Image (tube, rainbow, N blue to C red; front, side, top):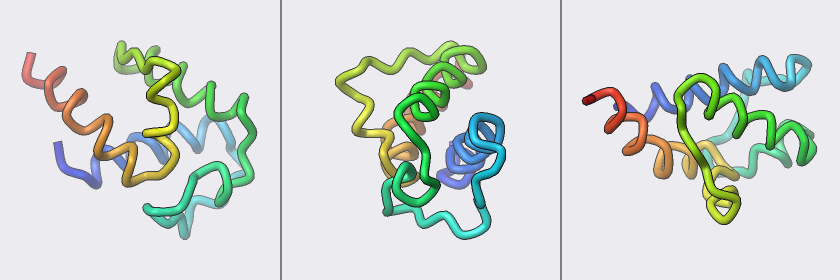
Length: 86
């Protein structure tokens, strides 16, 4: 899976979870919560949406790996690619 595809998936989920968030200039190496003024519930909604849409379980201890778009690509890319190969 291409990095941009993972970023698009995350940004698409954020647009549903936080519809007022300005996604036009999201930096891939800055924490999403800081950039988009999301709270912890918004973040949990993102994790739940990943579970619902992609049957992807993210353990609590891995939540920090999803802090930035780059982190999402690194963590989710291989998992989503493995699921697509099945």
